[in-house]
Length: 386
Image (cartoon, rainbow, N blue to C red; front, side, top):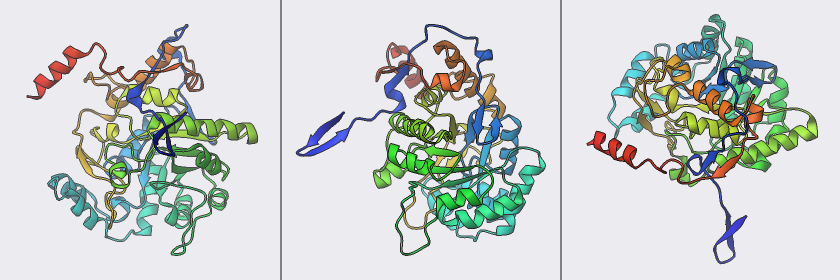
């Protein structure tokens, strides 16, 4: 229900992860017996986790590691890995830069032209390890790079920008036809990002296999501060999931909803699924892994934008291996490790035998869920920080 925020001006209340909680079920299930497989078109993945197409998170080596653990990592085709043959020195420069100079340095490094031969080489490098390969490009480059990626053997192609719509108006450049693109590229296509019912429904009609949901919630993204854009993830995922279900009733074709960004803990991830997500795309949690190329740093995809950067480099540290972050054993108590175990345990406690059943879990509005009864925890953490 919309509320008045001023004379003749209404706004709809929306919710983020910290404002809701999941209600335990009437029946509980052994966490080891729940089904968390993720289907994207004809492809099946053991775990419903994607690693964000950010240069501090995914390089070819990380993509291989993620694939071997049953997930999917997305390589950014417009990042440093397709601009530089030897990228280790570039990553070292970014990690050693001062916070004040980091964005300026990233902007300069990304001026180097993209080399099309490197696009094919990076994809072939990942495919040689016999794991699925996913790559991404912005809409303006989708047709060109999508064809190269397909010929090189990519399994999933992601078209991603800050805000993506079917109806885009421009006189300066050719607007991509998503319906044509999805027919031309034979592998599953994921399109993002969106946050509203109408846009999600229209994008689903293009023939894509999945939609990325989230504008500005990522830890390294500054879109909300720079542009004022965004819808909190709980509401955004729920609205787009409703569009997915309505489209399925109309077409009998299922389009996966992938919650993208804003999930810093296992609890956030569990809530994303309960709100309707079929999978989640995570950046900062994986940037903390030993396998991540960022050396403990993480920066948004729009950080290198020449005129209006909408990302920043943040320090996340290195807390463990990718296997520990995904499957444990957790060595930290803050919910940033054993994310798969958290999802399984949550499903068991709400009585959900599958992700689809988790999407039906009861949700309550609970703004005090993170602080209720946690006075001594808060005091201890403040003391540790002194």
